[in-house]
Image (cartoon, rainbow, N blue to C red):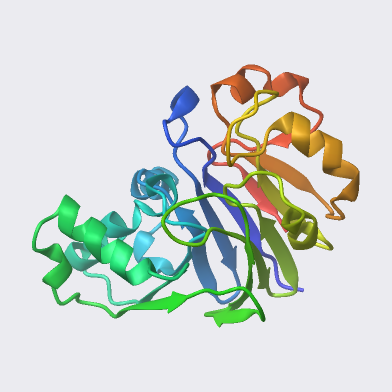
Length: 246
């Protein structure tokens, strides 16, 4: 079986707590590399890790908050001015194209009308059967996190391996579904004990841990309280730059 590697380019919250980059997962396998979420700081994280952003062929987005998709305009513009030729496919919730183009226009007026030097295409993910996106199959599970469009947890199948990812959400039974049988479940733990709307705390995750039938669990998207108390947690905590074989 071919090796698939997950790299945490960003494991922090929206506000860069502890100096961490915003959410961005890099998945590399035999047929190329992709991102799962692409927060506003992601291009910096990609280059800091010595990766070539022009080799990233696909981006999967769980929801349309800036710390999860705000790096896409920079990724596109970097490719345009950097001589990229590899096509880029962006897959996300309904309205993903409109939101990305609006972000481009706000950040760099006039850019949304540019004819890019490489193909940029969009796929809208929806609940139901798995979507084929480049080398992976992606199943979207609706979760609880208002963002002006549906928010998803994602199950990504690549070369016989399965990555499950919560995105941002309050606890929902859908997390049990998305994690079932996964080689790795990456789940947010924004707080340690404090209850914050539309996010999972470590305390809640610990209460349900026995129901998560995944081979390995790593928490991410950690805010200040979770980071201060991470050593108390009986679970792996992600770090920027960490590489995990699936």
